[in-house]
Image (cartoon, rainbow over all chains, first blue to last red; front, side, top):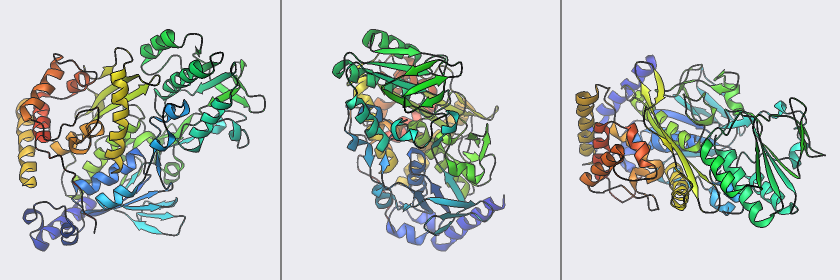
Length: 431
Length: 109
């Protein structure tokens, strides 16, 4: 509460300082930044879909009156969405890679490339590996995921040289592409999917389709074997099942309830909990996941020792005050996927809440929509979508009854929309 | 002018909410941003997914209402439109019809 009052005071001071708000019509120019006292300081950790969006919209909606520092260890943004197409040779890797310049140039976000080493949530300070310190009024934490390699015996650092997950786009995306190119016609690809929840529910099935498409056209005697720890295809279930039966019969084989617990990298063999073994020429092993390491360090992980529970009104952590957690790291609201689209919406919801809180007002009720496209070959796509709304009585973010749904069948039109979606969300997030 | 528009939009949404939904008033600019992922920031996409910035207000509203009613064929909007109240569709049509095609940025210090 004292925080709120402090911001209300700042706002009143700013108003008094020059007839500020009422007199300045656009609040958008250089003058606005100089003439208005800051509403507050936000440090954003992680510049993926969630963090970058939050940084942009904090600047946009505060009309430049919230100071935003965005800390990201990578020099460039590499998109997970559409990276499955790169693996199959249906898209150029370069199209996944985007600069962070726009956030600085267009919105005045201070982008800092460094690794966060410590956060003092009492003194509200963030420290980086380059020795810099940043003070914040509110912290936005969008750390993405880390992998629990220990859940699979033998998936150690040496094994990881040759057995790839490619579940964060980047060098592994290209390396898995190389493994497919080097595969002999007649060889087997094994794709191992962890139990939900994991990043991007339809992603592994899209990857299976993309790899099957590549094999069918370039290595017709080869097969992909999909080993799913879940009891069924967990997203777009019937769409994927029908499309595989129609288009990839003989190329793609699907096995539910198959959880990899052990890996032998030298013999390229996976073993499950009842001792069944499967050998492959290429093994794409996606491990179970948890919120990014920094979230564990800061102490916001309070759900199953894996995810950060948040108040879906503001995305503020239920464990540590003044820290808003976004994206895949959160304990998802009911039926909410861990997706880049959703993370972008989290970024906007948190930005809206913080602008209102800093201005001494109540945050607006959250309302978010999700759209996930999956490319099933080189041209056609399918989608799933949903609308999530804050229920003031139940105090939960729930899907709106009767809304949302999936495609009727793969189509070229949706393939075009899927590619347009990617371009538009990259721009909305980064420029 | 922008401020006036923003306030007008806010008042519109507020009164509609209060009148039809009984829900708390929410700021249009925040939930309009739901649409930006696909249609571009402020609705200014140039892609297979159509731009909605600066389109005719009535056209936008009638399209949204028809998507919601299921009478206008679409691949995805007929599902998403059902997630919004009628008054929110009015507010969205109003908001996007007021956007211009030019880019909006916050200038850097």
